[in-house]
Length: 447
Image 1 (cartoon, one colour):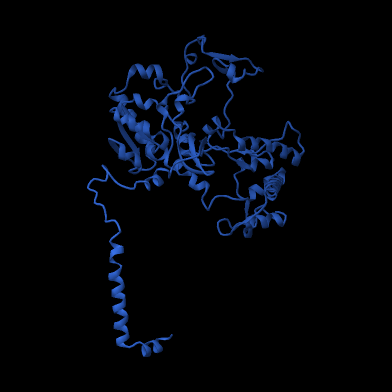
Image 2 (tube, one colour):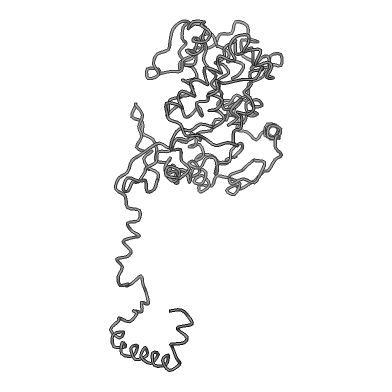
């Protein structure tokens, strides 16, 4: 029935009659409505509340069927042991194991529970990445790289890859099988190593603008231009340096290409974290001569003052953050030295903001005041540091007694074993003292 037909057939009298019928039905239904229970007034829901079965839904929200323990070992080297709680075959949530105090070494020494809890915010939500829509689901390769490989790895006269194949970040990735992915990687390494091997390979590198000293360091081995990085060195304590070992195995490829024999074949380069990967500050080692190795975290408990300099403890050492917090509870003073007001500065008693690049000058100025005013612990400095050692101005090496005492003989060290030339040290489990060689081997220039 359209609107016009409805308006013609329904009169005002018909509308009133229908409305009266509806009112009668509503009144007659009143006894039925009266059977419904009235709302119960609860003054104190914590003391009494009816029908609490619905709360079971919330109580069971994080119930789990099983658990398993795994090592969270990203690039930060913290290596946290986490526990995953599984329900219906899916990880529900993650948490710390609180099991570090149970660890023992081969001698029966037991670790301390002071390391617990050990986890961070990123680790707690890592399962979101595992099940996230952007997770890696299959092998894929950049479109331009695949086209370059399919066309036989063409190159310009100087050995460079043509620009039309170098559109990283501006082109999609193509799904491939595992077999094809392995094949592409192997063919690319063979092509790169072949291109930069021999005299022709050196000439190509020079045309591309590489420093002659760098080109000379390859010794005509194209495998030396392959760059591998096994991760942070401390990760090797818990996992095998797979990429570092793979770099060494490239000597097999070098022998295949140059036919130089196993004695002269060389592998690829395992780049360090400072000079090439720059995951760590290269200027730190250049200026101070030391790598950025952390102190023993247990020392925070015994320190009267902690200076956070060169690291943002709260942000970059999240699993270790509780050591700083607990030290503050014991009265330890905290000072931060940085180029900005960082997250650790929020926990500090004193905040020192310096200009970028002025760290060394500021440290030398502080050392000058400490030495000049005698603010140091003399006994500790003499027994536990190299501060009293003098430096020769002619060769910039530490001054040794034999340099100015005639016929001086070093006392025999009881905690050190001298390894004879040509002999190999015993297995690490059998080593009871520090082992050194009679002739110190100088470190390579690139270390």
